[in-house]
Length: 489
Image (cartoon, rainbow, N blue to C red; front, side):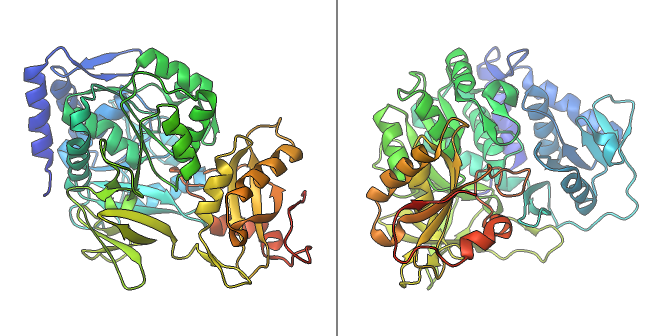
């Protein structure tokens, strides 16, 4: 099962014929109907050809323009490189040079060597020696590494569309007519699940700028502003990372009535957070995916009991090797930029087990630590329980070879004092076995993409955090025996 750009374009044409006045794209200022959509895409394809753009950076805020340029690049077979807004100047330069970009759509292109053209939207530069790409590459999605140097995942045009068709088949019975993009469209998960999937279904996509969604930079988030946008747009579906789900549920324990499907992924979701959301009527479905597999691989289905991260999507094959590592085939990457081509099966680095047909994750191969007492601990499990408490925005747990697990805690606001953090730790510990409990903790500044301590999907970059806080996290304990003792920096 491989879905081609031609099949996607034909699908859009059918929607244009069946519901010409239906709204395909809406950013709060402008609307594009399904009848208008093919023409808008074609106009941008011509502009790309006139500019001679082949490898193109897409550096816009969420909105109709982002969507139309992305669709034009996809359907034209050019190389699209979405640029995360949180990347530093150094990361932007690395992205431009390593991908050999010759065109830039968005502000600040001149800072990276691109010059204005007759087309006000497209800046270009001459590239003498194009870096080689894997054959068939039409999209490079960059994920910043712990060293700060982004790593490019090369995908062909069929991979994201294949995943989109799989997801559309799962959610089609829900009758979704409106999706609100809550994540930046430069995030592959939102790009596929929040743009291609709704359009495949003939649903409209609401695309306000990220500031209207409550984002303040790459790490700050105002849930009340996001809820106001939810109330105004009345979407049927959302895609969230765990931190956003936690913030929204804390701000509004009762779900907006319009919601029918809320996909949550990018990092492990605490069982207590899922239970609290579901108790409030939030239709939350946990999933699992990787950029190397064109985003979503597994998903819990509507109408089925939730188990782990759900069953594999129709396009995906999943198996566990002898060590329990999850391996995936179907819509996987061509390879990393500048590295050898990938094989058929992608080794995810995640550990898992089967619960019937559903995949249950058991942590990252390199992240599970062994305490001084020989107990294996998945830090995401403990971190998820801590972050399910209103006082804690982020947490990192470390206990490798230590008699007592330690935690860095990012308070949810400046009003959260040490007593409130201590109470949150005690509450989380009450539901954990002794070997997984947090015995010592410190307050921390937020983990963000800007300081290279967090991915766009909300995953902690542990090596980077350990590089900054390793002396305390790895140091000898001040406790003769485990006991709950907060410490301050």
